[in-house]
Image 1 (cartoon, rainbow, N blue to C red):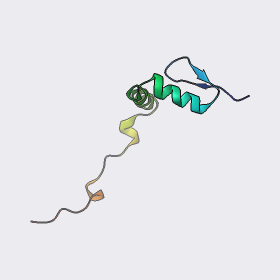
Image 2: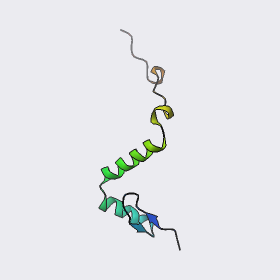
Image 3: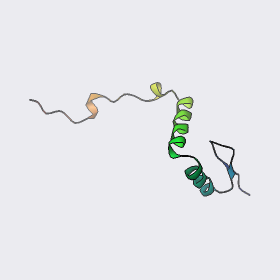
Image 4: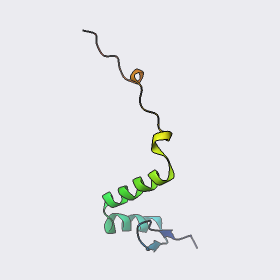
Length: 65
């Protein structure tokens, strides 16, 4: 028997990943799922210390006038 797959947004559990995916797409709006994942990521990592801001040298050179 496989481990059940639990919905992170409610108490539903499914034996198959596909069933969980269908549940998420049908019962929970995509924006709700995205908001949950963004909040989860923010709680796990400190965004300001993990990512470096882009530098000027990363892009193409601007033409001189």
